[in-house]
Image 1: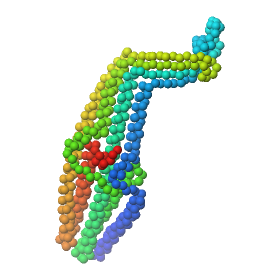
Image 2: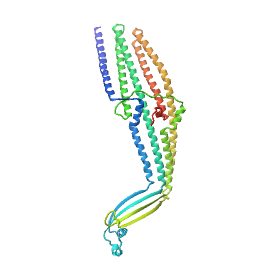
Image 3: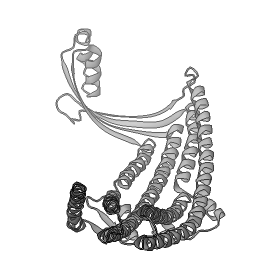
Image 4: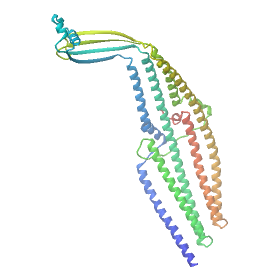
Length: 462
């Protein structure tokens, strides 16, 4: 008997020691949390979204890509503008033809230069040639088509950037809802700790009064430790979500959303489907489908001639650069027409036709996919709304059941195992309540994002 009491004392000391150690480690959490909170910043949801739309790195990257694409419009336009160049050349030669032409261009030809011996064996001669050349395309079909295509692609890139803005706003909203849920899990875990502490108090009191078993005290202590661990995990998850929000906002610090300031109402499904027709990424896909059809015109442009004009003004001197012993000018007009290229044009056109058909099919598939996702999100909203009511009733029943079993256990009419099972059911009910509320708000935000109205719903002008 004494040995049994000694063993119980040892086990009790080990359990209490473990609890004390855990309490000490958890007691350090408020200090660590205070340090973390000193490094984090609080924002409202709308402030966080606005910050993300300015500071998010993905948005900045795509904005730079959009500006680069706009520069392509200027590059395409440059093929239709005149080309002006200045050139300075130096030549020293004893080549008979070059020597005679250089001297002729310098306007220094004399009668002795026609001496056959001088023509065949000229002395070395220098020639500084300065020229100003202008070339102006008049009709280049590919350049006109290329300009139209570059403008269309710039518009598509702008739409793509707009969709990225909506996506980042949606991610911030989802993260804020996750943070709100994580905080609710913390509160639920705190209630679990309080309940576990009360159960342990009752078990210890019953054992002290010789109406309960010591095993009940040990089991209640273990349940308390598990509740404390769940609380610790919930605190960690809150910190992780805050840090993730900071990353979304392009910050090196954690961001705490002080409110889940989004109140979205559920409209008729047809409203969301109509709104999705103007979604930015769908418009971008349609513009790129238009460009795929433009590629057919680009291939057909090879059948047209290129027409242009040009001219040059030239100075020649045997003694110094930019010298003007001789002066001349030229004016030219040119037409270049590729009559046969080995059927390359025909294959390029056939390829463009197939790619245009592919792009159109992709747009059609995208429209149907969008409609499906909107329909799915709409059903998720309805499901989550019903689940909230069901989980609320389940939570009330679990709370009342746990309360009654606690009273029964306290008065010796039920076992601790029954009470702990009821407590586990209560904690599951609390978790499901948090999940259903978060699922409802997330489903509404998803429906808003899929229909392309999330910025309007948040009342954010971009």
